[in-house]
Length: 637
Image 1 (cartoon, rainbow, N blue to C red):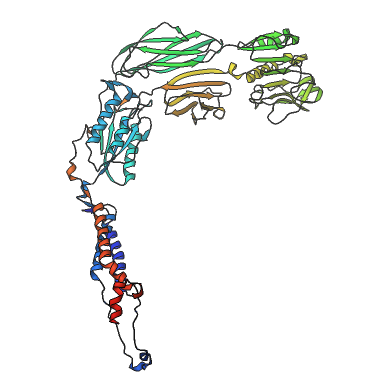
Image 2: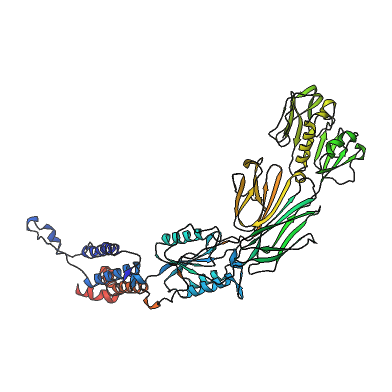
């Protein structure tokens, strides 16, 4: 026999304190007694008074024994006395159920995960009733599903409800977590049982293998060819042209031939037969032209045991040049500035034709105020003082540009100073305005972004084509910066890719700075990332679509493919494998606390019935006793 809750010293200490207190109450008798004496006794001389000394003795010893016996039994129940041996106590096991990408493969009549569940339920059925088990689902992360419990129905329900995930198995992390969980439980450590195909992320295992590890391996076929990546990039020279690449990987140990089928928005490309040697990776490249949005789909045939990475979808946005409506009375002078950029198409109209029916994304207003305010992003060139979209506080005649604000996107690449201007409008800048160029009197080129309330617009407070200004290199750069800022989507370099979940690495251009990068998902949630050696790295445990923004570039990373592990962990020879023999349930210790608590309460109740009512009757005054008890006492007096 042994205690679960108390040590032997703690038990005897509590027994001594409580038992001593109860015994002392029986030895100390402080109750007052009424005694009838002769009045003349109070006149007895002090020297002749009889000195009486009462001898202290135990009252009701059987009552005391019953109370002490009840207290001993209750303390034994609190200490949780066990009948049996300590070595028969329940142990704490950890079950690592593999739910990584490989668990979705076909195996017999079901999936690999179905076979794992059957092994897990068989292992659970063989555990002694007093053993506790913690269930942990492992893939890229170790996720505990239950605490240490011997609730078999709860464990079986959680095992049955497990589903395959998309990340690769991180077995190092799972084993470290299982060992720590057993140490924190402060119980008797049992086994750490891993159930899975032991295909791991990385080349080798770095964590030490626990001595109490057991491995249960279901049957599976590792001969598999899958799609690793699908990338699409808009051409730098032709706005409607796209370059796409499909990367295939042979994960097996034999040579395989597959048929790669690719299509975009219903247009089928010519299929390709690709042969891959063991562990070989091959990239197939495509080039196509389209202005419409659509879905790029790649698929390989024939299908093998793992089908989750044998087709991939990538949504491409609408592409094409930026449509600009220019309202000017001098189209021949503005045409060279706008038509030199292949990313835009300019349509010229007279001011009297505003607004034209030609659809556009940006409007340029040269030297006039329209009757109705523009509803599109607008570039104003030398607007009249009355009606200017930004208040003009004065005119600076024969001025020069003192500085450009190169820290802003609109001032990028502008460095010329002391540029002579015949006359320029000095604007009243407010909080939130973006000054681009300043003269001595204040800003003469300014931009404003009112957010969702109204479209963006920029104002050039002078004629950039007057005099020698049209020959300055700053003039075309200023126009290009404004058009890029007014419609960033049309000028942004687009890189789209579909890859696997887990760790994603994106190569950056040397001009891209880490402090100007931003990563958000489809829900607008900003995600953490790191930049090392010109590479952006981030981690996604679940399928998601991420947007990586820099100054003039956007990358859309669709992490929807499973992260299929490439390396197989070789199980050491000293690690236990297979289901253990069923444990002998007859050796389990018996918990006695319920019986002890019942017996203890019975002793206390028996003491009260036998002695408690008698003590209460003796202390009750005669006047309060029932008539049947008072009459004999009064007759005796």
